[in-house]
Image 1 (cartoon, rainbow, N blue to C red):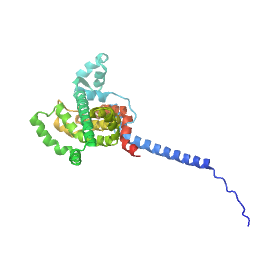
Image 2: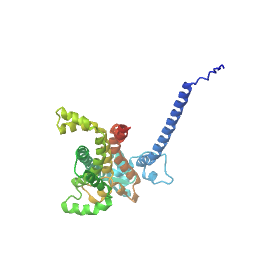
Image 3: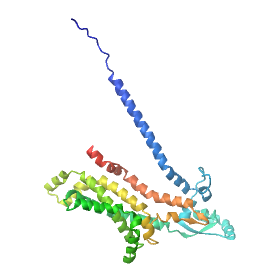
Image 4: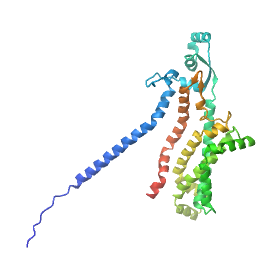
Length: 331
């Protein structure tokens, strides 16, 4: 009995690879388009805020909203200066010497106002920089040391201590504001920079410890053990081995701690009045003659947003690696 061999049709593997590659490219393109659309949708309030900051007051309150307008710095002038309304005689006299005025007074004159001084907002923005920067520095610095201790040493009751630290973060600000207000009044920390730095540091520290402990847990202990065998002290091993390896986690923790301190509203509203008042509770209180200065509020929000955007942009590479650090190590 003879068997007849019938050749099969050769498989074109290159065609299959091309189809798979084309399908992957299409999938990636679709995901990219969806991501861009979602990003644009999320940026609509920010874009609208930026547009409002450069509108005149009539354009800012117009209905329907104005999309195309002549840009003006009126909102920033209203935000950064104190003004008073002039009489008709004063306006007429000021019009005769308009060319002698600086640009800020010329813009104020368009609304019949004159600048009489600087507003409190620049000082409040500086307060935000000082308080948020100092509290972030201390919370991340103490957080690194505490996280290293919890990660590397057998501390009695470690799990209970970690839960106690985390529970501090669970407290809503409004629950503890009144007791802290009474305590700060008694000890003289009300409306002080030190009191706000101390408070923000204590609330940020729990977040910093938990987040940084996760990053330090991912660093193999063998690196430090090898350094100790080579004659390094524990502190030298921590400084030369652990810190460089944990830089991505430190950057991520820094950004999140800064955002909390920078945006915090309830404590800043209740525990400050003038000296240490930060920008968040001050921006909504911008009032003008006859109504709310929406352009000035938008200008203040835009100026308040810029420092955090700059810090996040500078640390963006570390932040991206820090957020995905654990998944990459275990993948």
